[in-house]
Length: 358
Image (tube, rainbow, N blue to C red):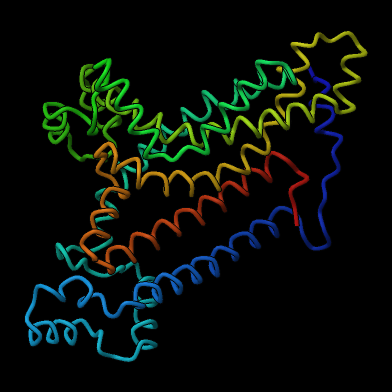
């Protein structure tokens, strides 16, 4: 059975410029990723060289001058800056992000080792954002300009305006210290982590490894530890999703096809949850790519607050160690992930809404 909303979407004209269409849109979006990453690589490289070479920044107060100079020459940091830059860009293209100074590990190994933990945390945060932002956004739209709508809007503003580290401290204080309901830190208990080390090959995503282990207790322990960090990071995005859903549901609720459905006797509840709700989700898809960047940046504070040992936690440790080679590689990799995520989200948005074209 075709609904009024489906008829409206089907009646939307497919905007395809001359010589364009879906493939032209995909190619344009893909080629925009390249200069974006190139600019980020250039800016990060120059910023990490403002204070001098990375060897001096990390080891300048711990090595005698002759050994320090030897390390600088060995790493090639005594060469002209343009030569170092061109070599670094070439290495990045080949997937070589250099060696960390503080623990002498390939940066790519660090990314692969700890990236799965950050990916898992971002997944939990997105679940929280969807579970809170979308239903409460619909509820606020249904009760527009009433007291409950005002309360929900204030709560949404507080959710994305409150610093993540403050939310993390507050959640730990209430649920871990006062109520003693949830663990205060870590990704799992020591016993569960030892069990997860027996899983081969390990994915680094504790939830998947616990499921593969076949232990309900391990799965429950992993999820139990994920509640507070997932909630702390997810509330930020939930506030943004709430405002998007509320605004767009209100907008689509007054659209012509909704008015037509109302005149046919369709109930207000069905109008809100069926006809006005589905088109209002399209902006959510387009914003997810931007929210990945927010989640990854927020993961630094969240992982540090809850000792969730992911990329954000390691980035904070390398910053404290003034290991600019590691910092440079991690930031560039995060930028690449964000750029590729935005590219994928743009394609999904174009598939959902045929009006999205160049």
